[in-house]
Length: 262
Image 1 (tube, helix red, strand yellow):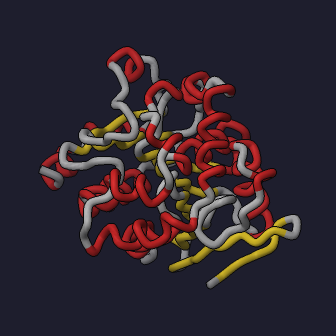
Image 2 (spheres, one colour; image 1 turned 135 degrees about the horizontal axis):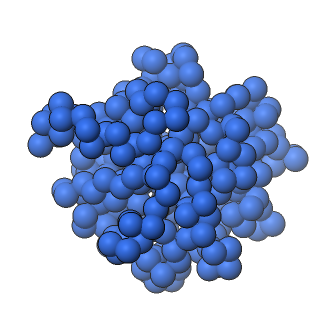
């Protein structure tokens, strides 16, 4: 296990590969561990980092650090201590929210963001995320298969107060305005059958800034990186291959990508 101390509290992380940095952030259920297959898929060309946010996995459980602002500070401090410069961020659920907030605050440090199962506003989040415990949430959102065991195994490590604090915070910050003002290239991925995060309405999609694009996975629930792993990894590879400054909307022009994922 790899870990560093940030202001006397332990942060657990893991790293694979060599090359340009890419950093994975987990969601409200599980930990860094369910990112392993995706990390392995990019590690040939990238140095892939994944960490446990405050209150999750093997990172410190400290109630004072559970706000979204503090999770953003965690990401900033981690990158500074590890000597990571401009980075591609891949976030899921809570991790996607943190990635977008970080990109809005530090656009010069973020090359691009891939955000899976991210609510565009707090009204899109099912109330069960707030009321049910981590193990119950894992049963609700994860099927039983070898691919989901990592998320299931680490779900009980989460402090329920960390989940609740982030959801309470999301209600107060006007997150939809943050997304609307994002200047960093951002690819949103939603599972068509996600029970935890409602799919965005047509007017929400129409209001996204030009550097942002949304793709739906027809056979996925809340965990598209596990439900349709090959498709997710191919999409991530193509997104990372876009030239700096290109919008992910350019992916729509890649007929070869559309043929491969059918």
